Image (cartoon, rainbow, N blue to C red; front, side, top):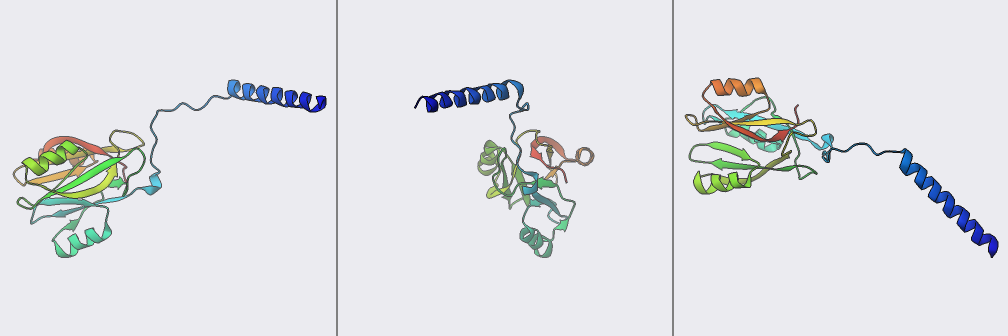
Length: 183
């Protein structure tokens, strides 16, 4: 009986020594507090444009893009970037709304923006287009939002030069509407 008791004490002492040694000599990596979604889960955010309706349309759905291309007069433009098709750690919804009177697709991460668009600007809620980062993290780029009142068109891009060109072409700057992964 005495032998097993001293063995327990020795094993406990050894375990305490190992834990003490491990915790004092190994430091955890510094954390920024941000947990990034796996980039492999991101999909293309396709950008389409209808020159007749003067409307930019963004979708992650190939079927939706094909319908817009084949039946609604849209043309394919370069992809806007990469987003998440479902709620993923660290992301927020990118809401999609549409105004039939002015043929304009509108996207926002702001619930207040959704409420305003529906109750004040004549838009209809069309669901969640994708999930994006709410701030600059995980290698994501700003998703710039612009609006051209004369054409009643919202335009979004991650490209600074494309944004600047749109601003010089009659669009007004409406800020950053989330952050998406570049192509």
